[in-house]
Image 1 (cartoon, helix red, strand yellow):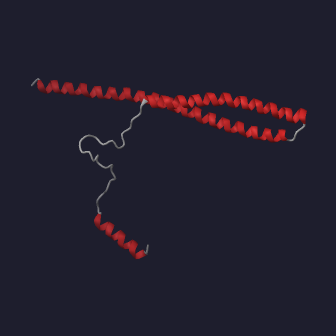
Image 2 (image 1 turned 45 degrees about the vertical axis):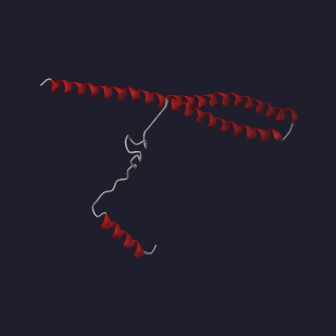
Image 3 (image 1 turned 90 degrees about the vertical axis):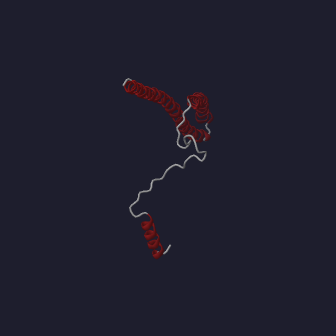
Length: 152
């Protein structure tokens, strides 16, 4: 884009919106009536529970299986290094050490997911109680105002 073209575009834009502010917005639901479905937050406890349980199960099962693999690897390494005298023992030990690091990373991630979803579910439930309390307070106030205005 040439400098002259840039300056022309800036001038045209300034003429169209000299002192106005433009806000981006979500398009109105083309169906017409009813609220827009864009941006609505929906959290289903069943979904949170299912994902959290899957992460917890993966954490537990993988932890158990990886422990067995780690013990088997250590046994092979010890056997190869000490009694058999193979150089391959050191290589297997190197791989097993890195494997243990990767296993720990996966276990940490699955525990984090499970814990985070548990906290999210708990927070969501507390938010629901709070919102219900606020709304019932508003309806109680509305009833009081209605009684006051209808009593005249």
